[in-house]
Image (tube, rainbow, N blue to C red; front, side):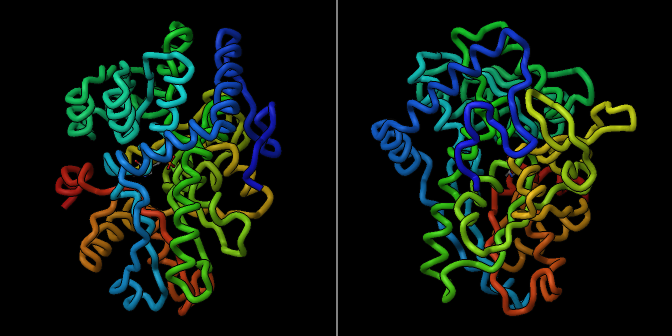
Length: 386
Ligand SMILES: *Cc1c(COP(=O)(O)O)cnc(C)c1O
């Protein structure tokens, strides 16, 4: 489970590579480049060193002592909020940027929702002396002004996307279109476990470090060595996939939490979006339905194909959290632990708050929550809500 999906990039009935003819060779070259790099000890060592010396890995696992006492459940937090640029996105981006450089590319293209992936891409481009162009929905640019400014400060070009709902889904379409016109020199750096093969697999492998670190850290913190439940928020699903990869071979229950307004597993149906087959929000006519969430990072109508598969086979469960529950979770963690979580990450916390003391998360059990990012970027939005 959670291993190499093979040359077709299938996870059960999901995944694959549904792209315009012009992108097939680029996807094939990327797959070959990744297979080659991932089998190369020197590439792995360079990535590992960059993650340690530049991005601040390993991030700690913090026991949330006061929250645990309040809930009657032992809560451990995997602190991706402490990684450079403030979220787990940097793990994947440093991997893809190093791979792009190895493949002789000098230009990184990226889509972004909340702006965290755009900031991470702009950061990696600066670090490695590459160009970065980030596509961002106009509406998200308004919601996440600070991140737009950060990207530009880092030297990236930010391109407003004015089509459709002017959010993440439209930014993805635009970035794919841009890649078609510049395949020779550009690498499309996708920010989650989605897109055509090899992206869902490759991004999960670059995020695996989250789960592998957490697995070893839990062994040192918990008498049972592993938590009863592992929970992470799911937009495209990269922080969850990286986390789950570290625990999929244990008996831990795996729980992914989607935004109630963007619940592709709960409310979606099989469909193709942005180059892959997965569960997708659609209307009765099969048109992609827009997602609505307080967090721009979870405003995506699809989900990574491997999550759709893990749900299919029952290895992971997918639940939802509402905007109200998420806002309450932000304050609860801030007050109990002095940690301001990202709105996205707060979906995972919201589930813990709701489930604690119920059969879903019984009193006395242990739960690892991946805190995918820090909440500074959301401060303005939170202030407006009060
Ligand atoms: C982008 C983002 C997410 C959602 O992306 P996944 O691929 O589902 O992990 C979650 N949390 C934070 C902090 C993000 O920046």
